[in-house]
Image 1 (cartoon, rainbow, N blue to C red):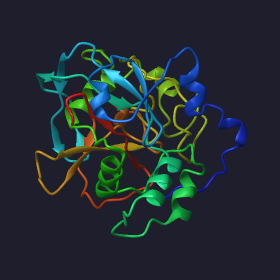
Image 2: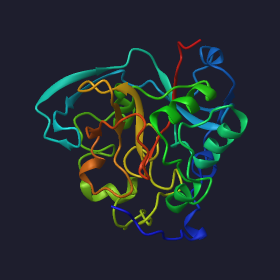
Image 3: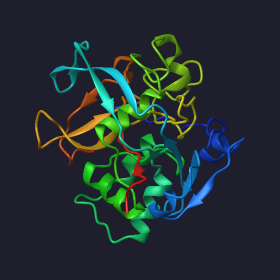
Image 4: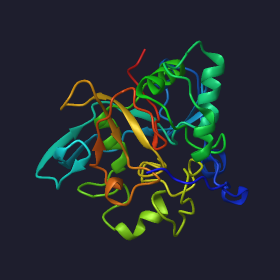
Amino acid sequence: MIKKFVIVPTALIIFSASMVLSEGAKWISVKNAKKLKSIKAKNITWKKDNAKMVRISEELNQKIKEATHNQPDNPVSPKKETRIKVSEPFYMDAYETTIGQFRKFLQSSNYKPMKPIKWDEVYMYSPTDKHPMIYVSWHDASAYAKWAGKRLPTNKEWEFATRGGLIDKEFPWGNNKNLAREYANYEGTGGKDNWDNSTAPVGSLKPNNYGLFDMSGNVSEWCHNQSNKNHSTYVLRGGSWCNFTDPLRVAYQLYPDPHHRSYIVGFRCVIRLESP
């Protein structure tokens, strides 16, 4: 389904990353993973790409319901429980990677996408540097993460972080579907979600309990993992701006080809404390 381009009024772009997280938060600038071992800061700024990152360390064991799928894009109700284990704390980008960050990566690295990025299409749905990068393949996202000294989150890390400490809940904020407009940019508008035909500037809505924004809606996010069903595909999580509420569920996932690009696909990065 192709959406019509709607210009996003400047007045709506007021929830920039720096505005949302700067209030009441102390951000420690970190240059490399080695320094992370000596600090226990909740909030850091990763120097390479100036990304705000949040430490994920609370409750490293969560019992959750594992989703089963009768088709890659057709999740069915959870049928069994499994235990998600995250052995070590890690830091995750508080926001989806923005266009501004991705352009900086392209300008300061030798990376050449397999297919040229069509920036007119990107700006149709993500019109400013504060919006999430879209039309990005798994290979593009992985190259950015490597350049930044980070990596894409594993499927388990993504789900653990998205739940924000909540157990057995459908959405990152709980089970109440009526609260979706407060936390997620998805099909239609209402509440804090005012973006019907485009992505929202990152951090425009409420974060989950770990301080992570847009874990549901806005753009679907690449994970590091190959699919368990088919090793030629990779995991994509989180729903998007043109989905309805069902894909906003934490358990929802898709398995596209790693070369796949779309106006609903973006990413964010993580770094583990044990990394060199």
